[in-house]
Each structure stands twice: as C-alpha cells, then as structure tokens.
Length: 311
Length: 311
Image (tube, rainbow over all chains, first blue to last red):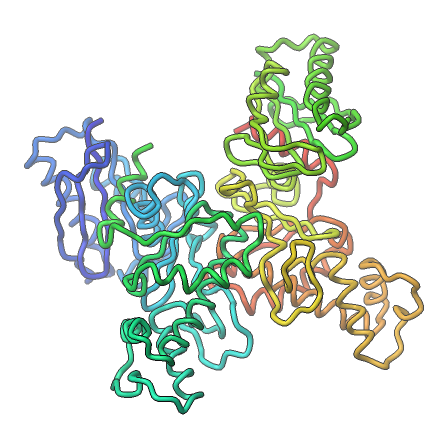
C-alpha cells in the first residue's frame, strides 16, 4: 500500500486529498457539491474525481489502502449515514454504496469527528490518543478520540457536546429546542449573547456600545485593549466554556482538549479564561489535562478522513 | 484456545472465575485479599490460585487465552495501575508484573469499567456495544463501553461520572472536595440527603420522620406505599439522576444505559422517575436511548475481566 484518499464533504465543495500512507499530502483539490436530485450526484462525482486522479497519476487499485470520507451529518460505526439534511440525504449505508462506485475500501464518519481525528494525528493533538476537540463557531461542535479511534456513538451523535445542559433558567431557545445548552454560551453567538447581557446590566461606557453589530472577535479584541465590559464578557464566556469542557472531561478523561473554530482564533488567552472554572468543576482524576489550539484549519477533515485507513 | 480467567480484585476478597471462551462459567472461587506489606502478596496469591486451578483441572498454558483482572483503582489502556489506595499499591505496570508471575497473557482495567463490560456482554446491556453503566451506591460510579471496548481515559478515570458538576450553590462538600457533584444527589447517600431536605422544608406528616436513620431503601419503599414526602423525594432524586445521565449521554450517545448498585434494586420505577428530566435535558440526537437494570450482580466483574480476552 502506498496511498490513501481523504475526502471532506461539505455543503458547497468537496475537498479531496491524496496522501501517502505516512500522511504526507501529495495532492489536494476541490470539486463542487452537486446537491440537486436528493444529493444523488454527490458520491458518483467524488468517485469519478478519485478514479480520474488515479488514472492521471498511474496509481493502481492495489496501491490504495482506501478512501475515508467525512460527512456533514450523523454517521455510525458501520458507515450508515443516519441523516445529512444539508445534502438532501436520507438514511443509507454510505460505506457499501460508495464502495460499489469507487471500487476501493471505504470508511465514513461525521465531519466534526473526522476533523478531530485529523487534529489528533497531525494537528493540535499530535502525540496523544485520547482527545476532545471542541469547535467554537456559530455553534459548538465536537469530536472525541479514544485510544486513537473516533467515538461515533449509537446514532452518530458522539462528541456532539454543544447541547449538554449547562444553565437553568435560560429564556433564549437553543437551535435544538432546549434552553441552557453549552453552545448558547460557548459559541461565537454565545459570546455575543453574553456581551449584550453585560451591556444591558451596566451603565458603564464601553466601545462595544458603538458597534452596530457585535461579533465575538470584537469582544475579544476590545477585551485585549482593556475595555472593561468586554473584559467582563470574556470572563463570563470563559467560565461557561470551562464548565462545559469540565463536564465532558469528567466523563471521558482526555489527555488533551483542542479548541478550534472561529473563537479559537483569539488564541491562548482562551486557556487563561477557561481554566479557573475548568479546574473548579472537573473531577480531580481528570484534572491533568492539556489544552491546545487546532492547527490544521480546513485541512483537518482531509487528514482525519485519510487517517481512518492508517494505523 | 479453550479457557479464560476473569479476576475481580476487591479490597477484602479476590473473586476468580474460569470460563470457556464462549463465556460459560466453569468454576468460580474466592481467595482473601492480603493487603499487608504494601499489597505485595496480592498478585502472587492470585497467580498461585490460577496456576493451582490449572494443575487441578489439567489445563495447559496453550489452552488459556489469558487472565483479565479488574482493579479497584485507576488503570490506563496500557495496563498501568496509576493508583489503588485501598490495596496499598502505588503506580506500576500490572500487566507486565502479573504476566511475569502467572506466565499467561494479562489485561487489566478499573473494576467499575470491567464490571460495565461484563454487563454489556452478559447482563443488562447484552446485545449492545455502546453502553453507559451507572452504579448507584454509596457514591455514583460508572463505566463506558464504546464499540465493545472500555473507555479507560488518559489516567484511568474514564466513566467516573459521579463528579460531573450538576448543581450550583450546594453547601455540602462531596468526597472529591467539590460542591454540587452528580453523586451528591444520585447516590444512595444522595437520596437520603434529598429526603432530609424535603422533610426539613415541610410540616407535613411522613413516616420517614419516624425512622431513626433513613436509608435510600426506606425512601423508595415508603414512596411506593404513597407517603407523600417520600414520593416528593424520589421525584427530586429522579430529576437529578435524569439530568446527570443526560449530560453523559449527550457526550457519548450510548445505545443503552444500565443502572446498577444498591439504588437500582428498587427496580424499573427508577426509569419512570428519571425519564422526564433525561428527555428534557438530553441532546435530541441522543434521545433514542434504552434503559435497563444490571443483571449480573457480583459476577459482573468476573465476566467483564474475562471478556477482555474474548472478541
């Protein structure tokens, strides 16, 4: 075996990587995600792209370990897609169906979980085999790696940590329909929710008040510049983030927690903000946990998808 | 291979089982746990017991797949005991050390995790490969099985769910030093704590007031008989239990949750008590989760220890 393909299937584009079995990226390219007709073109398009690349590079079937693919939806350990609303897909066995098209071994996982595996292999979690990745974006996504393998869960929702209940008495509704979910506070949207509440409660001046629309980046930037209400908002944000991560860490006892997504771009200050509450709330047996920032950005999905075929 | 040994190492006795590789118990016996001298006699005693049984039954080394052992302490995926205070043990590699004594392949795990594996194989979780076991005893212990394997975690604290933070503003201190841990409410001790608070808050009559010392069993028994304050206490108990289990289930997405330990003896009424809050707080993608009671009692540890050698 010489090669493996890693596929990161997104709602707009499909990113495909050709890697050698040591994990060195040999080629990477994109094709559009053709979502029409119930998503029925997507897999044939990917199969054609991969077979085309093999012809172009004179790669034999016997040289390819397999094709790993990360899907924006729930995928179980047997390669069943349980739902992938954005692609127009209903329940089917992707592993078998895609194998019949691409004529190579196939493994599939949820995109967030696969990206976590990529970060564990080549990114922020490199060198560790028990990792929690938390993606702090519009929502809070996540992925859990146990002994080097993805925790998919019964119905592909393993590592979907954004909907752990964190706060009683929340009036705002989460996207999932509940109230008081982790992601209502620890996402970029959550940071803005927190900042608005801080502004409402106080009469103090803040440059946040001058902004027509507040973003998470504004809050962290102004906090760095010493804006008091922005500082207060980031402290509250860190408190929630630490509490939520502590709940997960107390359950799975990770070696390292890797933070990705838009909010993680504010850097290592996040660790200072979350650690007081993380250390307060986490079970003492799970306290020795490292923190790191994600490193692979958009390539995490390709690396993780490929890793499913590399021991 | 014909046989496997399963060892459940407790603080007072060591329970040893000889199983065939289909999981049928062929023999089970106990030896005392000799804890003196820093626990240095424990492993030689077990090795001697196993070798003796092999001689007695004319079993060759080549017929034994291995010896699995559950330890009352933190054990990582490499067979390192990180701590086992009750045995007088400090950190060492049990897998290697015990192998040098018993001359057979060895695997080791934390006793609660190993018991969970046993329940997943032969007990309440039979037929499932993604399971959470919660043991509701003096504290709340747990074990997590993912794709049929134990989730040990980085430092052997995987599945130690009793110390997830559940309640702000708790004044009582948990055994771990924190305030508001899951086990402060969902353990047998927690049920008593809840009942005492219910009694304090109310002037209503209750047969609980006649008891010199209240136990969890009293509370559930009197609730069944219609004692109003006992009923109220069990409802609050169920609310906490459901919340804590929902937090874990939202992270690991189990197929089934198995309840064991003393409190589980009150039976399936526990499911009715916990489900309203479980369903309220769990992430929708993890909602289709079954519940069952543990079935193996004290044999769960032996079965689980043996299972580590049986695919």
